[in-house]
Image (cartoon, rainbow, N blue to C red; front, side, top):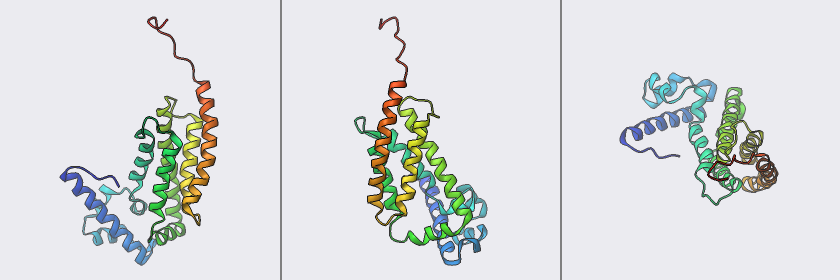
Length: 207
């Protein structure tokens, strides 16, 4: 999780975490559908308006690290070392996210998500949004248009790798296996993209 700087930011982050912890505790104790927003606000000892200033919906309370995960994925592209290839950087971050989401205590949360149509729908929309953000970061890294199909495809593969590996018997081995295929696909796509890029127009100085 990104550590906020500044007293005000730390206080906001602490309140947000308190609300998320209270929500998850109630959801697991009573069932997701049996708990309302007012119940969560009362459990966290905050006003309903305060809760909504941190979370846009009831579903968002379950995926409280949504924005942090999205930021980590894009930073795996933008903040990697200049000599580090794209796919290994993505694999490292996906591996870390999978470890986080398969840690002890995570199974009841995923069972709750799987049993709720609203939560499954929210998770799917979240994954699509993460894939689009990642695709834009990849395209920007290569100086390509944001909607470049190859960038969107590799981004979607990476996000799907997270979901598939999370459900596997050996998540770490699954990530490595999936990323071997992603590496091969990206190598072919990358070569094609580079060959298709127009040569820079020579300037008067460079002629």
